Image 1 (cartoon, each protein chain N blue to C red):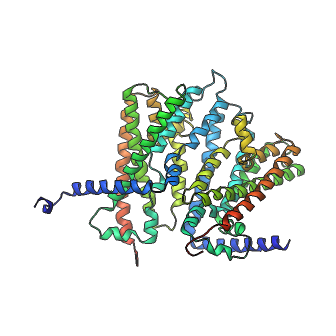
Image 2 (image 1 turned 90 degrees about the vertical axis):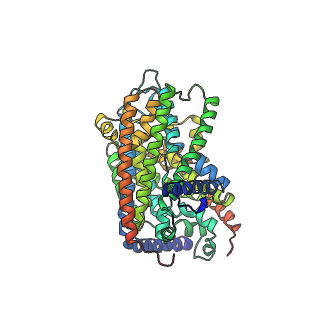
Image 3 (image 1 turned 135 degrees about the vertical axis):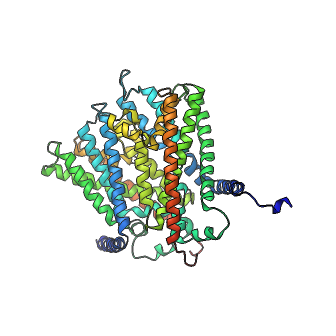
Length: 264
Length: 279
């Protein structure tokens, strides 16, 4: 419990520093908000155009895909708010600037990945939440008390999966330095997460809901809130992805023990 | 004596271009794992994943999206992935970093035009990606002959390739312009990323422009991304003809002229306010 409180205090400090940093770079603040807004609009436009040609996409209706996009946007906003540092991991590992991570006041996984708080992504997070609520408005019972409970569960699952995948992909960089493998993995992951998982063949769906739980970023949470999967199924997925996340963090810590640089 | 004769600026630039191209080629192949990841796999995923989306939409034989049945859509997406690989990529230029860190100062004291060095990177990009695409196409024809696109005619293939090259040069100029904004802004990567999203959509990488609503498609036909990916794909498949190719060349040339003038203007203005103390 003490450790959890300690890391929450660290998170608060990261947020404070992030806010101070962004107050100095106001244009960056604006351009990042606009960038993510463009990303949202491109996704919405793409699916709206596709639904002009069909009524169903692998069993997902237009209203359901809008909910799916809400989860995609919100889990992306969480990633941008807290986990933006993972994008720089490969370069920093190559440059050998991670030594101080061993001395910092917290678990290296947490301190490294959560250090870059993004205030502008909070604006995008608010927009994404607005879109999700707009999409859920058309779903009967989705905004009732039980529906909101399921929503909180689904969002927790999406955020946990984001964190586990962000950390997990960087492990590849320990094996192939300066390969950009983690960024490539993200690029592929985001491409796969951008579509409801049901469009993929069975074997691929199984992979994306188990070993590489890309579906947990958007498809599974949306399916749970929409009642496409039962609470029991959602619980099973959540338990597995939680355990997988813990395993990934342990694996990262073990890989980091072998990290050495000229200064290390 | 001939080596002491004054060299024409164009000849000097061409020599420099050759040197820059060789240097960039060595640099990009220096890290083997990075080379495979960055150069071979770049830009392939999004169009290929869309094949699964269209498989779900075009499940019945008579289903169509903008006149495309499923096999034609697969062919189009393969073409879109191939053409997008040939387009200059935002990560291909690190000019903004050089401006931020003051390195660009050294180029101003050297007797060479800085733009030729960047142009060397463009030539390297096109050469490497054209080789990668050629290998992918040979493999694709061997492994998936029933799905792999076949050109409507030899001239259709050449016309498509010509448009893609002109479009790639437009993309290069846009990258250069976004990077040059670093003279005024603290951060430009967000603008690069935004340009990339908008470009993909406007180019029809995920949804062919001809499948979009008429008003939107009509607007996009005046922008260079359409003529860099979507139109070459449709030309290759025989869905567009030579008059469309001519219109595409004219639109792309107009864009090149406009972007080049803007590039020269911003570069000169940027250099005037640039300070690289200690670099």
